[in-house]
Length: 410
Image (cartoon, rainbow, N blue to C red; front, top):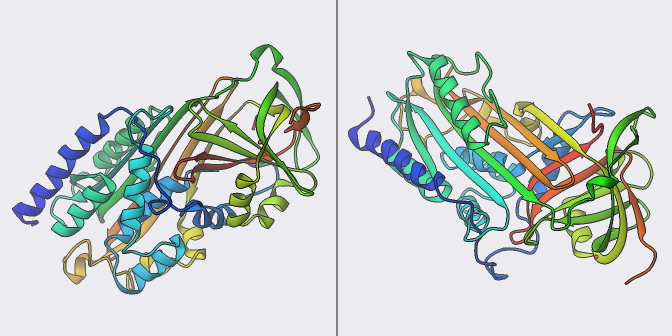
């Protein structure tokens, strides 16, 4: 049985999250150069993971790298030895630095008077009889604003699975349903680590609804589908082009967040993404210049789900998934028979884009088991074929969501 102090630590975490989650979405103070790097700290991880996700011709991709890193960060906080080293290398931020990086990003995103709506929530769900270290509970509560929840995984795994899913549903404003499928939580589950993120923002300049017309959207496979194409001329829109692509940066109200859209000039989106490195995205963003641009792009809604085990293993996180090699002794001092390893990492995401706004949400869960930019004629930016997009916070330069629209209607 866990000690009284550990039980209280978990309960105190829950009370702290209830107060934290009730706060309105707010904006932070613009950081100095010493506080936050010019490039997003998590961009390299995001692009590497993007390439590892299942991708086929005419398919859509959408995920939140921030959500995934928040969850993995809470996992990394309790890792030791080779397990911690592998996770740090995959994320690109060491174990000793990541909690402060995440805390800083979250402070910026959730600071005072944010011009867009964003919420982030983290929770650690532990079997009530499983001993959780006080220092681990304090770290995830302090740096990740995470709650601690006592669960009855041994006796009521299905009840607890539904409770976690209900929490995710509420935190994502009913956008992410059934994050944990039937069977993923069982009597051998000792801990589930979750993150939920929700984003809702109106365009700084909205598309003209009267100009939205049905038109052909050419798929990478050569086929075409009929899509609702939005059409509006934007003045002083951030724009960049080179031989391989065109890029625009559509700002949301308040100008502290935007959607960077990358449209391949030739080849397919898959060809484009293979050649894109994290520093190239940062370079494109820094070279945007204001131009008059006639923008055509589809309205779309994407819903995706991923089992990230294979992708994370391909990125070098191996020991964490091996019941004989995993070392999460920073989470618990439990006996060898109760030793933790990662059994699954699941992620679901949702995004809807129309003339007025973008709404997006995502959630990640990690289950752990006991061992077993002058005036001139407008440039034409016609996204009537697949494109990549990144929803990013301009203050922290972090990618909140990344996606590919392969088929806006399928």
